[in-house]
Length: 250
Image 1: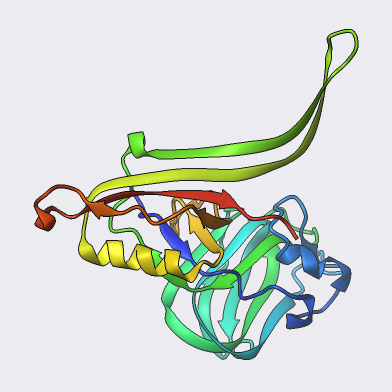
Image 2 (image 1 turned 90 degrees about the vertical axis):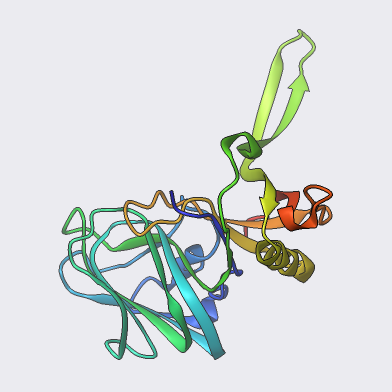
């Protein structure tokens, strides 16, 4: 099983960073953290290639690109100009989400060249595009008893005069609690660095380059850092827990 990981915030977070060949009005959906809304090309419903270029105001270190809920079959990923430095070439894709991890590189821009779609003869679409770097890959996943993910539904409930109930569903949000026993000093220190930063982070529960399910959530680590020695014998490692809650949408 793939090991869970914490990634940075999305370095792609403003419309001014993006250059597209068409349909600029949907660019903001590429980073709004909603996989139901996304970018769609306009006038490229054939094998004619179209490009999304994300350009940073200063060089950035990246190691991951995530593409959630897309329809691309033939596409390429580059950095620092199209065709210059290849990150991925895939002409036979059949998955609607793509997870790409690579050795860290410093880039000024990232290019996604979209050549054709899985369906064929439709506009190219991608709902979320994440560009960032890894903070920590877990040394091991928590056991099933200590891994509790949940889709939390924010609701407003009204009881009517006749005793009936009216329910207003506001938004679904991801939450998860994780706990370990007997982790190493190095893993404990890596987690402490993440907690001390007090920044939002992307949590990827099951990263894999093959048939990735597209699960990735921008979360905050709520509460304190409670890791302590698991036993009186300090050589046995550390035990503790993490609580994650998804951040607001844009």
